[in-house]
Amino acid sequence: MNKFVSVIVPTYHNWDGLKLCIDALATQSYPFDAFEVIIVNNDPDDHEPNFNLPENFRLVSQSKPGSYAARNAALALATGEIIAFTDSDCIPDTDWIKNAAVRLEAGAERIAGRIDLFFKSEKLTLIETYEKIYAFDQASYAKSGWAVTANMITWRKNFDVVGWFNDSLMSGGDIEWSWRANDLGISVEYAHEVVVKHPARDSLAAMLQKCRRVAGGTVNIDRKETRHSLLMFLLRGYLPSVSSLLKPWKKSDITLIEKFIAIGIYYYIKIYSTTYMIGLKFGIYKIERV
Image (cartoon, rainbow, N blue to C red; front, side, top):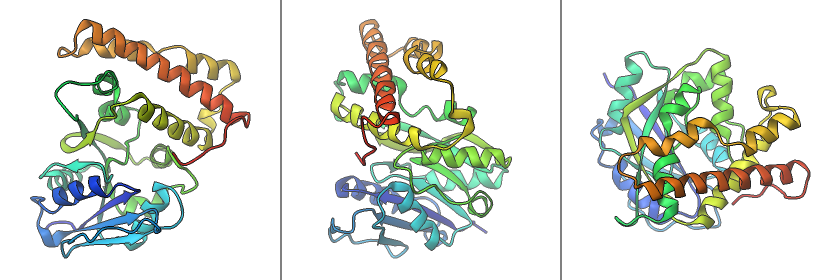
């Protein structure tokens, strides 16, 4: 008998993207009566269009800002033994739920599913080329013990043990929850066959907006392992890692010039993020929802 699955999808001012996500979830190969989809509108003042939702879908609202507050609101309503997370700008593969359930029933506790990027056109912008190399490396994330909630699936019982997301965070709540799960011995594994598609960011403005959001979440995560000395913080923040410098050279479909440009963008973003975090730590900037 198939395990009942609750799919949780927070959304914030993204009705067009959500429509694509709904269409993909409505055509899953998993039995229709064995899963539910809970969509959480994180801005109740932004009234949703008239979606013709399938019978096992529902749209609710959460006024507390932040995607983790939205996910917690859905957790309170979810009835599944398995909880599957994706985002409203993602397009799950037809076998996404089925493959995740198979992996979990084979013994996995948490899954970091594969995230494939899609692009606006065949001719990529420089930022899209950077994203193609550096974005959403779930296999590496899983090796470090975490997964982004764009494609993370786990047993419901793990939330009873670990607790829910820290809903004071605007970003990084998936990492913080993963650390708590790791501390309790709940492992995560990468699942190549559990796939969602995610749009690549295509402009520097969009990329820097993400950097500010992630920096705000990182500053707020309360964990001893992240409290480095100032010197260590500066070294880790401003010096590029060897693995990151090597990543472009593992891509055969990127030109030599594009590889060097991607490395330059990577280092610029690293400097920008670290400098912004310093500004947050010293009160020069304020954490905002961006």
